[in-house]
Image 1: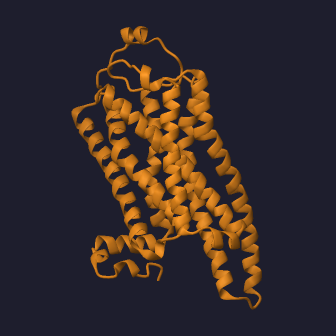
Image 2: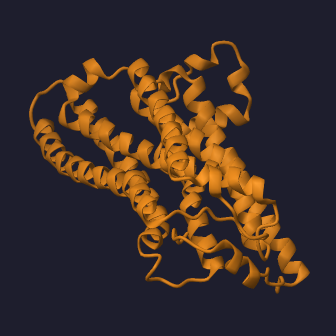
Image 3: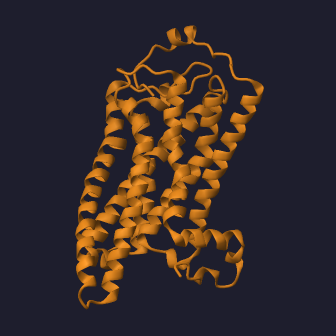
Length: 327
């Protein structure tokens, strides 16, 4: 959204909801497709949550970050995407001002949390590849859970503190049919730096380092194959490289989905776009929540096995949590 100051009374005098121009048949199809996207997002991320939460073999530090991201994507699919899709299909916002305020806070919180969760994944892969012995000894599942809880808490506190001091809680107002929170230029820049520029800079720098380290590991693996070395060392290096590759794809898709909206946020005063296009940019940012489970299913055989076990209800059998999902 274009985060600028505005005169509420002048805007509302000239504001009106455009009439819906689509045919009833297309209108119905749009809602059916929207429901399908929401269902895919919710069910896909729910499968990730159940898989990592249920199977003991998947209780690793990196998977705790994936579980946290899946939880965020699940909440986005359940509480953000439905109102967003309704807003896009209808001619304007039809769910009321109070719900709009709650919707914007939830969507903003989940967006910030997802960015920092992805940054933590980048830190995790960097440490795992650059300092494997330190990572193995210092990073446990319990420690990573503490990091995840802290990330949720800090992002929530930031949201409350930022919007309190920016005056958003006490002076928000919008025209009927609108759903925007407007900030002055100073607070908009502060928010953009903290919630996007800084974490994305960290993500890009760390993953450039990760790819360089992974390239060195690939050379080392080729050399190890030509000498008699412990198989466990070779397997460990391959596993870390594969994890870095898959999570690198996940990070890249995330940035591709998020960049258009934040570029508009940065250059909003210089770019004139229609409100419908703005909805599409916001929806594209949250579409990443739908794509992530497909990335897991495409690159992780263990996730496909978990899906089979969940769908066939084998997880309700005794000691199902101990099933070897990697075999």
